[in-house]
Image (cartoon, rainbow, N blue to C red):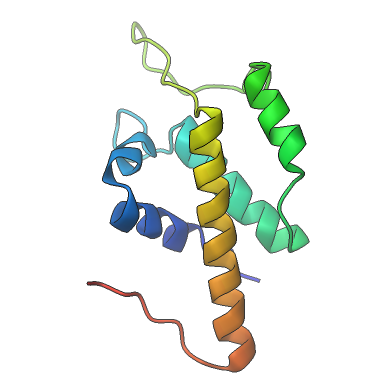
Length: 118
Protein backbone atom coordinates (compact mmCIF):
# COMPACT_ATOMS: atom_id res chain seq x y z
CA UNK A 1 0.00 0.00 0.00
CA UNK A 2 1.02 3.55 -0.58
CA UNK A 3 0.00 6.16 1.99
CA UNK A 4 -1.45 9.21 0.18
CA UNK A 5 0.16 11.73 2.54
CA UNK A 6 1.04 14.15 -0.26
CA UNK A 7 -2.54 14.09 -1.48
CA UNK A 8 -3.79 14.92 2.01
CA UNK A 9 -1.43 17.92 2.19
CA UNK A 10 -2.55 18.97 -1.29
CA UNK A 11 -6.21 18.68 -0.29
CA UNK A 12 -5.65 21.04 2.64
CA UNK A 13 -3.76 23.41 0.34
CA UNK A 14 -6.86 23.56 -1.86
CA UNK A 15 -9.51 23.71 0.86
CA UNK A 16 -7.99 25.49 3.83
CA UNK A 17 -5.06 27.86 3.09
CA UNK A 18 -4.90 29.03 6.70
CA UNK A 19 -4.40 25.49 7.96
CA UNK A 20 -1.99 24.80 5.09
CA UNK A 21 0.35 27.40 6.57
CA UNK A 22 0.30 25.50 9.86
CA UNK A 23 1.40 22.19 8.28
CA UNK A 24 5.07 23.16 8.03
CA UNK A 25 7.82 24.09 10.43
CA UNK A 26 9.48 27.50 10.28
CA UNK A 27 11.92 26.11 7.69
CA UNK A 28 8.97 25.56 5.30
CA UNK A 29 10.18 22.02 4.71
CA UNK A 30 9.71 19.81 7.76
CA UNK A 31 6.24 19.10 9.08
CA UNK A 32 4.96 21.00 12.09
CA UNK A 33 2.92 19.27 14.79
CA UNK A 34 -0.13 19.88 12.55
CA UNK A 35 1.61 18.26 9.56
CA UNK A 36 2.89 15.41 11.70
CA UNK A 37 -0.61 14.67 12.98
CA UNK A 38 -1.98 14.66 9.41
CA UNK A 39 0.77 12.24 8.36
CA UNK A 40 -0.06 10.08 11.37
CA UNK A 41 -3.73 9.87 10.46
CA UNK A 42 -3.00 8.97 6.82
CA UNK A 43 -0.43 6.35 7.80
CA UNK A 44 -2.78 4.83 10.40
CA UNK A 45 -5.53 4.60 7.75
CA UNK A 46 -3.12 2.95 5.32
CA UNK A 47 -1.86 0.35 7.78
CA UNK A 48 -5.06 -0.47 9.65
CA UNK A 49 -7.70 0.63 7.10
CA UNK A 50 -9.53 2.53 9.79
CA UNK A 51 -9.00 5.63 11.92
CA UNK A 52 -7.66 5.39 15.47
CA UNK A 53 -10.35 5.70 18.13
CA UNK A 54 -11.42 9.33 18.22
CA UNK A 55 -11.77 9.28 21.98
CA UNK A 56 -8.09 8.30 22.32
CA UNK A 57 -6.86 11.14 20.10
CA UNK A 58 -9.21 13.83 21.36
CA UNK A 59 -8.82 12.93 25.04
CA UNK A 60 -5.04 13.12 24.59
CA UNK A 61 -5.40 16.55 22.97
CA UNK A 62 -7.86 17.81 25.59
CA UNK A 63 -5.62 16.62 28.42
CA UNK A 64 -2.53 18.11 26.74
CA UNK A 65 -0.72 14.76 26.78
CA UNK A 66 -0.58 13.92 23.07
CA UNK A 67 2.68 15.82 22.61
CA UNK A 68 4.06 15.49 26.15
CA UNK A 69 6.69 12.86 25.29
CA UNK A 70 7.29 13.77 21.65
CA UNK A 71 10.66 15.03 20.52
CA UNK A 72 10.26 18.46 18.92
CA UNK A 73 12.40 20.04 16.26
CA UNK A 74 12.70 23.58 17.51
CA UNK A 75 15.18 26.30 16.53
CA UNK A 76 17.12 27.64 19.50
CA UNK A 77 15.54 30.67 21.08
CA UNK A 78 12.18 30.33 19.34
CA UNK A 79 8.86 29.64 20.99
CA UNK A 80 7.43 26.14 20.43
CA UNK A 81 5.16 25.76 17.45
CA UNK A 82 1.46 25.60 18.27
CA UNK A 83 -0.10 22.18 18.65
CA UNK A 84 -3.31 21.27 16.83
CA UNK A 85 -6.51 22.11 18.63
CA UNK A 86 -9.24 19.52 18.94
CA UNK A 87 -11.14 21.23 16.10
CA UNK A 88 -8.06 21.23 13.87
CA UNK A 89 -7.36 17.58 14.70
CA UNK A 90 -10.93 16.66 13.77
CA UNK A 91 -10.51 18.45 10.44
CA UNK A 92 -7.15 16.74 9.78
CA UNK A 93 -8.69 13.38 10.64
CA UNK A 94 -11.55 14.03 8.23
CA UNK A 95 -9.18 14.97 5.40
CA UNK A 96 -7.09 11.84 6.01
CA UNK A 97 -10.18 9.65 5.92
CA UNK A 98 -11.63 11.29 2.81
CA UNK A 99 -8.36 11.08 0.88
CA UNK A 100 -7.67 7.51 1.86
CA UNK A 101 -11.19 6.37 0.95
CA UNK A 102 -11.05 8.26 -2.35
CA UNK A 103 -7.76 6.61 -3.29
CA UNK A 104 -9.13 3.18 -2.30
CA UNK A 105 -12.26 3.70 -4.41
CA UNK A 106 -10.22 4.56 -7.48
CA UNK A 107 -7.71 1.73 -7.00
CA UNK A 108 -10.45 -0.88 -6.49
CA UNK A 109 -12.31 0.25 -9.59
CA UNK A 110 -9.15 0.18 -11.72
CA UNK A 111 -9.54 3.88 -12.49
CA UNK A 112 -6.60 6.21 -12.41
CA UNK A 113 -6.50 8.84 -9.74
CA UNK A 114 -6.14 12.35 -11.15
CA UNK A 115 -5.41 15.48 -9.14
CA UNK A 116 -8.08 18.12 -9.59
CA UNK A 117 -6.00 21.22 -10.26
CA UNK A 118 -8.89 23.65 -10.53
